Length: 134
Image 1 (cartoon, rainbow, N blue to C red):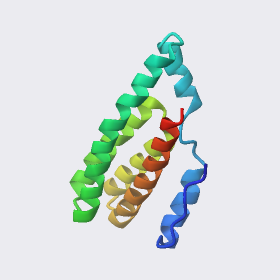
Image 2 (image 1 turned 120 degrees about the horizontal axis):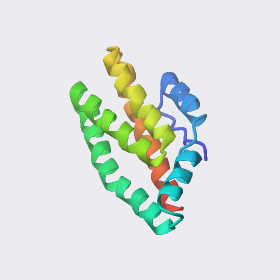
Image 3 (image 1 turned 90 degrees about the vertical axis):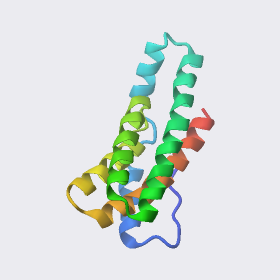
Image 4 (image 1 turned 135 degrees about the horizontal axis):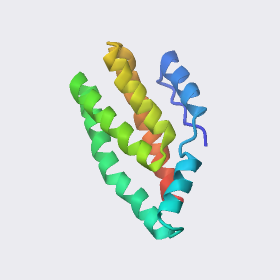
């Protein structure tokens, strides 16, 4: 499912969206590994995926606050944490955007980092819809 395009996005944000659309929302290999770990019990896998959402919501709220207040340290910390938990469930696209956000901050590309925080929000929303439909 392609990421929705919003009219108010600038060209750079739209270019980021195109780049990230090439990355699957969920990495099938990681989901397979989770299934193996859970001995094929779908309830265990669903519990793992369900436990992701509350923590990710908290981190996305921190990212929103960081963006609104231009709080670089909070954005970096929240993006780093989001990258980690996203990787653990195979949320490949969210993990990549979060990692790129953190890397943009490390490279002192702050405008890019704050633009990527918008992509994080869109990607997160799309991922949650997918997870709820699994």
